[in-house]
Length: 302
Image (cartoon, rainbow, N blue to C red; front, side, top):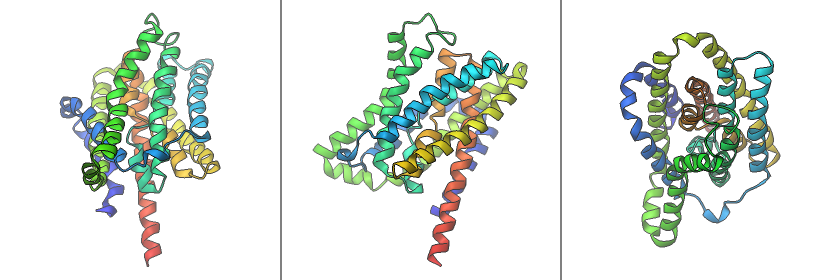
């Protein structure tokens, strides 16, 4: 089964493209999938080893500064408000809740990635409402109310699995050990969540994107550029802290579902095209990384 993992994500992308209209009806399933993915990860985490490091601070600083800076740079270069907002939302978009799934397969430290999954999402819950108070379609919404909306969105899928796992580790260790045996399922649950999320956005693009083909093409090119930049910078800064893979994944792998929601709620709705297209590139890159790792592992066994 391990040899097939590199092909699961491309298959999920193709399914999302082909059956986008049908997948819209499954959107309510995604939060439950993410919750299960994180729970299966968190029960396998040594909670005592979770700590914020310089790597977390550098990645947060990158997201905060580059997202806003890129918005104004895009505007200065003549890009439309739609494109600029897409880039802003795409770069600020929090780390994927299930980034730990891919990261650990690639050899990253589970605790390092889990830590940023928590603090990175909390950072976005604080910074995004500030940015959206002067950018986007909800500028009249009070900042504190906006923070609460975002926190309420991420809490069930980020905080709840963490506290459930903490309770199980301390009060029901046998149940915790039982769930640990099935942590490998989280990868396939993530592929299902990706398929549903991508299908939703592709369907939205077909329904609403006809008049903005030029902007969509620009966002497509920009999403490739930022995918390369974020994985590259993440790997570089991660190498400084002894975990190059973790650095690349926590900065490069985005929660596209959250990015799409942020765009639909606070920005021009079609700006959600940026995180949707970004999701394709990041998962193709992740598939290539897994294929290369499996190839290298096979070569070392020969």
